[in-house]
Length: 317
Image (cartoon, rainbow, N blue to C red; front, side):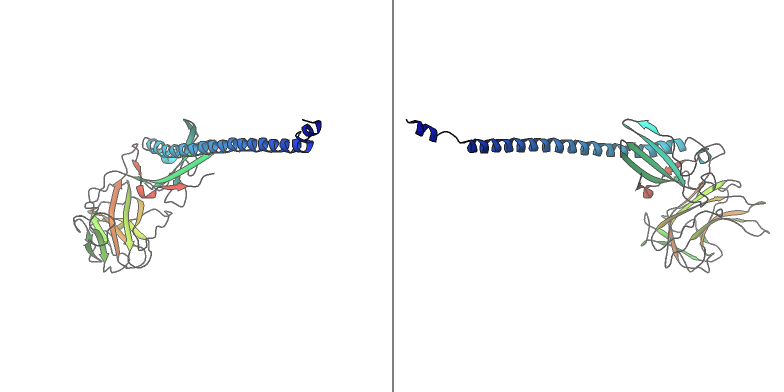
């Protein structure tokens, strides 16, 4: 073979440069793919970690609610121990920590220590790394219900119209719970409503918690709970909730209302009644799931429990 022939098979400098460029491009592409895989892996890792922190923070928030409920039920002075809307000190648990706080649920004065047995909204906050979760629930007084037939399952037994100022009926078609509700209609005025004789169950000088599920027939209106005290030869004494408790209007859907009332009548009493009326109109209303609970003896804690229908997730910074 001649020298000229051998020269024709030798790669030119231009071809060698093209091959080098292709190899470099492939190397860069492979490097980019590798870096992208590493970046995606890191993102997935961070996402998984953040998701785990969020789940842990959620569990810590719920643990805070349980912890707070136990503390409150063991401390008869909790209403004066804790300040409205103020978080407790942070308590470490596992990989994070939790705190909790209370808010006055009924009184516009925003003081936990005023108003007797009013409910309080409890906030549980869990924190893990950058994750934050907060849940809240309303704590309500629990204990022996002093009312007879509170769910109206025995018809109108235990309830009466005060002097014919209304008509009572056990209603089986529009109930909040169970089989019946109490229908109150043909009211002669805003003061027309059911009463129940609780003589011997109500003690003068003690706080009482009233609760009921109610619905109005036409327009929203606030119901009024009271303790009615009668003594022969004396005018009636009507004990109502303290001034300052937040209004609780009830519309045409079932709504829970409550009140805290202090029994402080003067003189003796022949009969003491639980009573419900409305503030302004004589419209028909219905009631179900009624409660009347007495405060415990002095120095004993008032048992409080979360009301199931009041749970909610809250925004937290």
